[in-house]
Image (cartoon, rainbow, N blue to C red; front, side):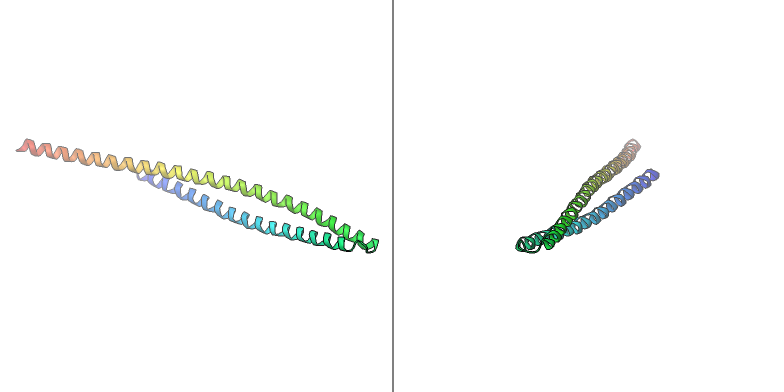
Amino acid sequence: MRVSETHLGTVIRVKDFQVKKAQRELAVIKINRVQEEGTLTSLEDRQSTAMSDAVRKMKSKAVDLQTSQAFIQSLSRQIQRQEEKVQEIITQEEGKRGELLEKSQSKQMIEKIDQRRKDEQEKEQERKAQRVIDILAQRMKSGL
């Protein structure tokens, strides 16, 4: 029985390590998402400011308007790429959450199996102890 105790204990430690690793990876993904969302917000703010400036400068030279328009279009493309990047990270984060859930459930299942096995061993020990007590009581009774 000692071999199976070691085996399940090792399995539980491995599962625990996997859960913790997935938690760390998820934390890194969350930090990355927050940073990328910050970049997206910054780009959107720059675009909004550029558009406001362009509206105020409507009576400016045509060259200035073309430059402003090109800058705003460039920001729009950057925003689109950044939104795609944020969406990829969100998808990655959701996948990691699913992986973490799966690993946690797997660990819990192994822990339950281990606990049931320990409970069965305890019951078996109690039955053996009770048999010994019964035999001793029977011998004492027949010896009287």
